[in-house]
Length: 205
Image (cartoon, rainbow, N blue to C red; front, side, top):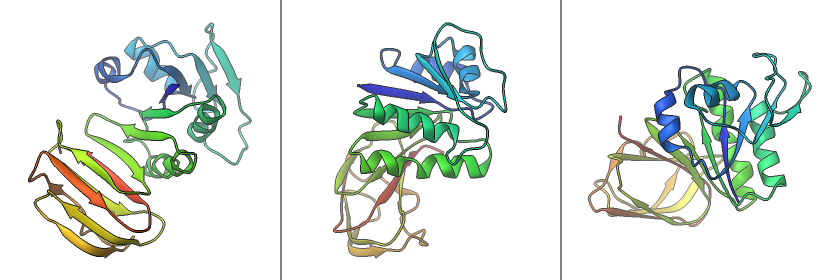
């Protein structure tokens, strides 16, 4: 089952959401994310939140109200609920561009989905983010740039083939920016590594 989570970052483009959210997926709004859904004409199947930043909506869909004082963010509760309900793919929208701590927390939450072997990405107008713990290929598609960052520790044995800037058996530190803003030489770039977790960012800006 594919699950789409609409988070609550402000100043989102309703047209982008309307054109890019999979309407056939199971849609979960995270707290004020239901307002982003409303603006885009998207009907959520489930709303989860503590509603401390927005009023609890009066609509005919399932709502799970959380306590204000809790350990996890509303978005992370949505991610855990997606796993509980049997998701095999998760796309998260409206998770970037608000408060920096919220954006970083949303990015780090992808690790929970990675550990549960669920394909996952955060999608915005400007970029697409995903985590990887094994080798993968990148198709250029509509993106000009790709960046690789080590998340949680060093990535060892990193090899990049088919890009403008290639690497061979490189150890990428979590504090290094050498993997930033690479470009496609071929239509497909191959990434391989022996150990670690890579944050992939595809972008045009």
